[in-house]
Amino acid sequence: MERFQFARDLATKHKRRRFLIGTLGVSASVIASQWTHKVVAQPSFSGYPFSLGIASGEPLPDGVVLWTRLAPEPLNGGGMPSVNVPVQWQVALDENMRNVVRRGTAIATPEFAHSVHVEVGGLQPDRWYWYQFKAGNEVSSIGRTRTAPARDTRVAQFRFGFVNCQDWQNGYYTAYQGLAKEELDLVVHLGDYIYEYGPQPGGPRQHNSPEIVTLADYRNRHALYKTDANLQASHAAFPWIVTWDDHEVENNYASLIPEENQSQQEFVTRRANAYQAYYEHMPLRRLSLPHGPYLQLYRRFTFGDIAEFNVLDTRQYRSNQPCDDGLKPRCSEAFDPNATMTGTKQEQWLFRGLSKSQARWNVIAQQTMMAQYNFDARPGQEVFNLDQWDGYVAARDRLLKFLQQQQPSNPVVITGDIHSSWVHDLKTDFNNPNSPTVGTEFVGTSISSDFPETFIPPTVAALSANPHTKFFDGKNRGYVRCHLTQNTWQSDYRIVSTIREPNASISTLASFVVPNGRSGAEQA
Image 1 (cartoon, rainbow, N blue to C red):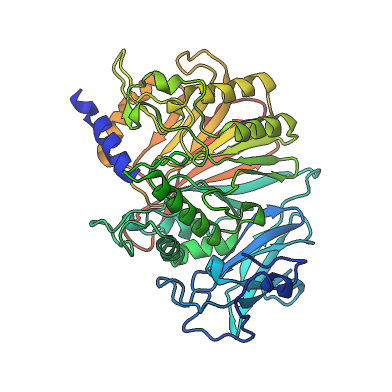
Image 2 (image 1 turned 45 degrees about the horizontal axis):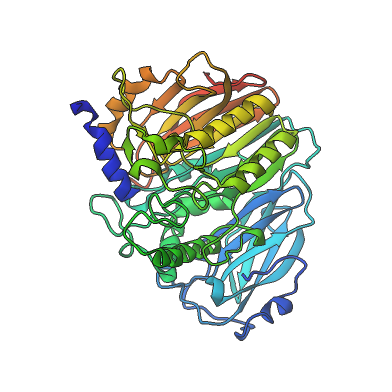
């Protein structure tokens, strides 16, 4: 059992580790009338107000969301007076912003940390646009975004990247330096955009406060992460679709159940603070406007006939982790038929969407590893990560049996969380290698978060006990680049040479292909 001391260590470590906004068609005066603050016509700022960059997201065939936040003192609550501030925006057909096709004014309010979420409509499908903001006499940099192809359009190819887990303290965002230079239509972020911990020694940079709890804490932590130039460049280069995992609130929380010893009321307040700050810093639609400790985040995006993304939220509604969480053998609770990762409503929404989809590739974008993985290679022994779907066996079985019975076209799961790269065949019975393969899972490594090197050899040793697992790498950081055609899906595991320095080279570690009509990936 000595060589599986890593299992107990990882369990312990994982527990520790583990608006109103202006919009097109709504006048600034109408929005401003909902608040009591005076609107400043020509504001002046103590510093550059667009210090957190700009972003776009939620692409539809006729529009996108544009985001920014006024923060002349980003790590000090933003440094804005408690007044409403008009922010002008414009969208153009060219990168020089000469051929403007949409423009308007949004109101940045103190209630939402002077963030702006502009839902631009009336755009043409499947094309690039450029956008920019202005507040007072200050202008933002110029960002680029792209609308989705029309729903009934034949699409020959689609490119996107997916990313996750960017612990500021563990390393630089050199992966985003490479991502910003890729030719992509979209970026999907699968969670752990921020980490909640206080300063930890040993990394190349430090968090800016003790562990975060209050709304001001979460705002300052998001602001710290947003100051990274490589992250800003990736946001400015492509539209993003985002979802969260646990560290946006607290490691390994489940629904309204905290990891640490807090009262439920304290945690409900903490979750509300975290959810509001998340909304304030992401390019999300009014659909996701937080209501106390609740925020609608699961949603669906369609890109012509080539891909449909079902974006899940597996934190807000999940049952408590079974068997007291951690990395250990499963107890009977892990097989509870009432246990859920998604909640009943979201699960039914997912099944309805998959059954109706006309897309060639049906993507399930979610957080924790779906495939079974027994980390103990010894005969008759088992060790599972119970924060993953391995702790929610009945819920996973329902999904995989649905895929087997309903046979939506080419289901592919994309996953983050575990700070390492994996490729899995999704089986109806993971204990029977001859059981049907009903989908493919690509797990992307982290941008900067750590997978301890001491855990790599035992995980590799366990591969023989998990024949549905086609690939594992725990050493490298980076992202996954996906190229979809009508005939194939290719995932390229892109890795950086270092996260300990601000600059790095980038290369492809491995590539895997899924042919249309055949579940399971093969190395390219």
